[in-house]
Length: 137
Length: 368
Image (cartoon, rainbow over all chains, first blue to last red; front, side):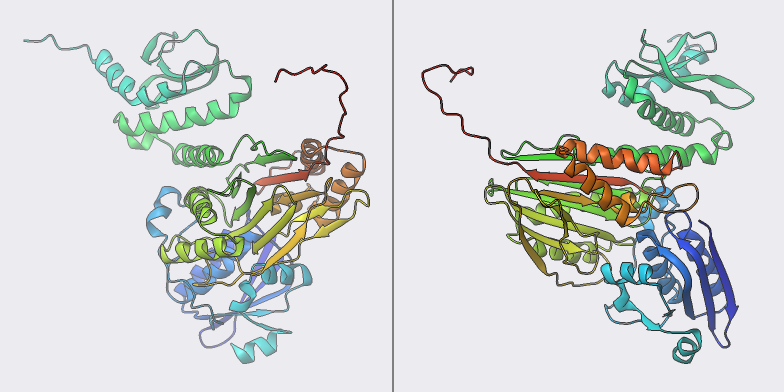
């Protein structure tokens, strides 16, 4: 299943990324790449609209976490970099509280279950719809 | 003054030195370099058939072929991987123009190393535990996920069986390396912790302190009292274990959870306590089972997985047969679609007590 990544500028240093389809091991790096590009162009906060995302594999969690780090100016290792990745595994683990870089919109039940199960949901503020998220981002 | 060696011989010596480590595989997996006529240039001579081979050297000045010979029929994949590794080693170290070494070869070799690394860490044989039947299956995705499992008696607690199932998020060499780092860490933590939650919490702390956790690990840790059947489970973000109850064939989910490893500096995990009655079966798995995808995009899914387990158990499947049935069902379902993720399943059944045979007289089949 393909993953569609739609990006909109939302004013200031904010952008909206709407995901449609499935985020899994076969495509999670494209989301990381999209985050890198946005950061390079000045984006510092992202509203991640999950309304159209029907499936989130555990690999997708890496992409969500990587987005936060990218927006903080940290460089997550490229999972496909091979041995080079060993030397770039350093990063600051999140303080454990909610972060401000990425806000989520409307995860479907299946996606919400994965976020809950893995405890990563506690990293994110979650909103019902995009406008509420934009007001918060 | 020593006679200078012919250049071909010098290359042969250098290649032989590079190939020396492969000799450790023994006669069933021999790596050598041959010229086009099949004459040995370097490596170990062998009469075994060629399992895999590839041209080696600069495209404009081929040096010959790297061949992997052996007899192990099941070893084709291994041979291909060894070949890729040998090619990478030779091309890089033998001073062949680096451009001749395709990027693809490097990546393939790394993937091969990752898979070998991973396989070497997954126990191939389940331990023998009296009164229990254990069975497992592990299958690497092409691009290596980071699944691993382990089953062992913790140090100084011989009555106990620790079963670990874990999945490093992400894929590729980074996932395989984190797996290689985490597995002994978890083992040691279990040896030193009376409670599975404590073992996982300590593992998390070390992963975070060592800053190895660019990826995360979902992990499930079960302590089984092999005599009483009582089970303590801690779960760091992993798929919950299932218990198939003998008789009713109902499926219970051990509902205990918590954050995955490596994402938070400190985690507190709950534990669930359940008891396996004789005949009950514990099933641990990774999302490679439930997330397996058919060509039309549908996932194998929780419901289908549970149906397969229930049906097989109702039909009287042994632990081994249960694992094999799941693996076969996933294969039938995906029908040749390449697996995006590793697939791992471990089944532990508490065996019903053997019926006691009262022996009259002295006819015993087994010597004392």
